Length: 257
Image (cartoon, rainbow, N blue to C red; front, side, top):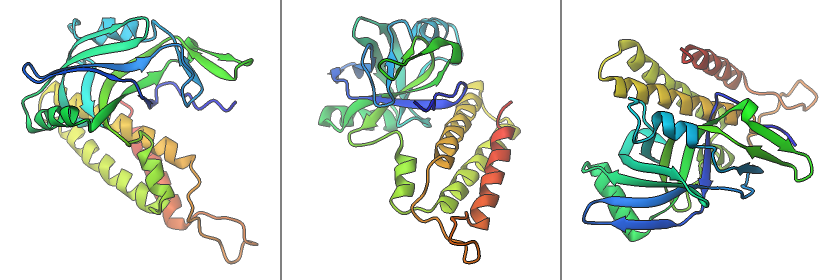
C-alpha cells in the first residue's frame, strides 16, 4: 500500500461521529473529534492513547500558549471557541468547547442548533516512528499523532475540497496561483511580525495548511492537462503551471522556520 503518511505535514481526518450535546444557555458543545479502533478511509486505525501527549502538552489544562484550537473548517482565522476539556475515553477523543461571543462563534451556535454542523475533523501531523503497517489487513496502526486543532465541519463538506475543486474544473495552474497568493500574504504578515504571539502562531499554522494543500495537489492528476503538439501526444504540463509549481515549492521552503 502506498504510504501517504508524511511526518511534519499537516493532515486532516473527518469522522462521522455524533454530536453529543449543545447547550444554548452556556454556549457549550460536547463532541467527539475522533474514534478509536476503526479502519478509516485512509486505511488508518487510530489507537487509544494517540492524543494523550498532545493533550498533556497543549490541552486546555496546559500552560502552553499554543493550545489545541477549536476552528471552523480548519481555518486558523476562524477560531469559533475554545476547548475547555479534551480527553480520551474508550470510544474516542471527546471534547467540550465554549463557543465564542463573536459573530463566528454565534453563527456556529446557530449551525449546531439547526443541524448544519454535523461532523468534526482534526488537523494533525503523523509521527513516523509511531505508526506500524499491518500487511495482513493492509492498514496502518497509528499510536500517536501531533494534534493541533479540532474543527466543526458543515455537513457534506470534505477536507479534500481543494482537490475536488480542481477535479470539477478549476485548472491546476489557477489553483497554484491561488495558493501562491495566499502564501504571499501570510509570509508578508509573518515578516512584519505585528500583533500577538497568538496571531503570529495562527499565521504559521495557516502556512502549514497551505503546504498540505500543495503537497496533495501536486500528486493529483487534473482533468485538463494540455497536450504538447510536438511531443507525440505525451502529456506535458503547461509552462505556466510548471513555473507556478516551482514558485510554490520555494515559498513552502521559506515557510519552514
